[in-house]
Length: 193
Ligand code: AMP
Image (cartoon, rainbow, N blue to C red):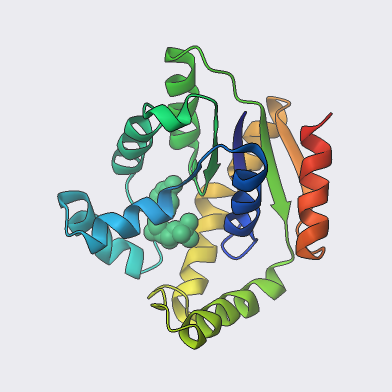
């Protein structure tokens, strides 16, 4: 199964992706996690991405397309994967289309978590507080100032993908405002159709 999870920052893509990993046994490919790992490891990609990520802006298509193309060729992706936070621009959507076509792979679904903007900043602040309370590192971009930029980037560059996948008849929407378990149930219902 090959899935794309779409939605603004704080919509719950990561949480739902982890549940799908547990249920379907396919990996979660989070470009945000991959980029944070690159930053932590001080790689060339990490050095190029760090300031952009800290500012809440999008890393270049060239960088993220390359890391995803490399990642989907790894053996654990043979049975499928969940793309979490990728694609995020129309150019990335074209790139993922080409990547899959070159490998003879079909995309099963694009699932949008539909969430009211007003709750998002609160979720991000919560996530930061929970990480802190658990003694985990707090993401530098999980604060209200940077969050505003992340949301602007989402509307400018990522929201157009909703129309793109709708026009391709690949878009499926779930109510991301529902309790976490209900969102999972909605996604599973869509996938079992
Ligand atoms: P996330 O963990 O998905 O919220 O991503 C954190 C940050 O990583 C974003 O604000 C971007 O700076 C960068 N990033 C993650 N995925 C992408 C992507 N597909 N395209 C461009 N930048 C990305």
